[in-house]
Every structure is written in structure tokens, then in C-alpha cells.
Image (cartoon, rainbow, N blue to C red):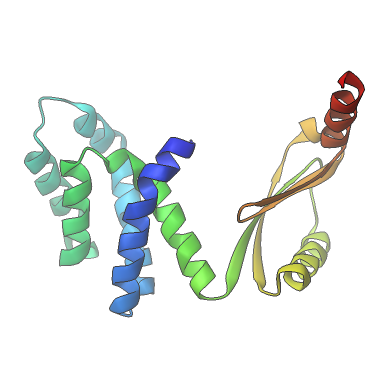
Length: 178
């Protein structure tokens, strides 16, 4: 996973800089999301994995399927990914682009993993606390993992806060082994 993120980062940063210079962040966001949908299609994935299909053929097919949904610059970007054999990392590029876009707008993405379902009020309260801590707007995404036993894990950027029962038990087990 880290390797894919490392490979995708320069692409995402380059597209972000281009989109920012041309004041077209939202347009690029839409185009990348559409390209990701096309790339995720089963037939497109089979063709991109087929060594008999040349990159120029795949590029032409991808762009013809995309039609007017991709402008020239986005089309060139997709061609570059296909020629470089990097179409498979497009989802990670989109994720990193959206993170850069959110950070530009002053919004941080927070991934919250909870042992139990959280209601809207709890999510709002947690978001408010995180906004106070980071002094920025927080967009929280919540997932459920019963293996945490209780509590939650919050990831904001490079920071991870583990307030789960499982994390506490692992910490105690580590301390006892020392």
C-alpha cells in the first residue's frame, strides 16, 4: 500500500499544481473521478492487463469511451498513465489529489474507525473537537471495526490517535513482555 502511495504522489501533486495554476480544481476533480470510473470497469481492467493490447490502442479506447467528459489535458494525463503502465494507481492518485484539494481549502480529512456505530451527534462532537485541535475544518469518514472491542482510532493526515480497547490491550501486552 505504501509503495502505491509513493508512486502515485508525484502524479497527484503534478495534476494538483496544474489544476491550481489554471483555477480548475473542481473540474479536474470531476474529470479524475470520471476517469476512475472508466478505469474500474471490468472490461477496461481486462484490456489494460492484456499484454496483446498496445498502450496506444488502450488510450484511444479509454478516450473514446470517456468522450467529452475528459478535456484535452486530462486525456493527455490518462495517456501518460497508460503509456507508463500506471493506470492501476489512478484510484490512489485521485485520493491524494482530493486530499491536496481539501488541504488547500482548509479542510482536513479524518478517518475514524469505531468499534460501534456512531450517530450524527457523536460524529459532529468528535469533528468539533478535532477542528479545535487542528484549527481547521474536519471532514470525518467513519467506518466500523468490531475487532477494536471498544473505543475508536482517529487518523488525521500523518497523525493516528488510538483510543481503542484493542490498542490499550496491545500496549499492556508489550509493556509486560519488556
